[in-house]
Length: 141
Image (cartoon, rainbow, N blue to C red):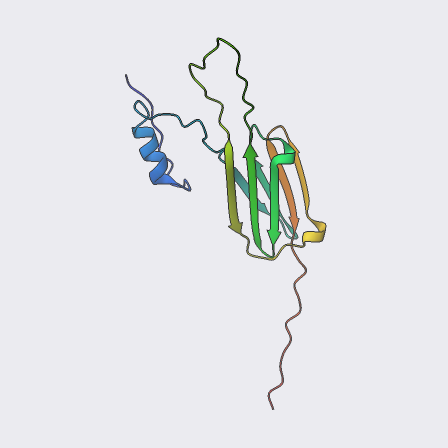
């Protein structure tokens, strides 16, 4: 069977993605695979805009932390177990687990003015840049 395989040289995990696509016919799906968080990051004059794709997650299970210029997005997918008498699971493709993503921005973020919205599986963050402090010139004695 021929299968179209894609290679993205700009992928964050190019080796893992390539090996995963090569082993597709033989790989076993993990029942507790974590969701993958994919982001789009754009910068305006006074802020950063981040769109993080986190499908299948409730907004209560998303954790966003900002520490200076380091942003961490974490999400937990909880699969509810339902067992019925006389029913056995033949295949499970819904995943559950925890994923986290951290990245560093060029400028510190003003945490007090930061905004977050989650709708239709997309987390939208607006992170204003902290006002740059004036450089103080020292006089040499």
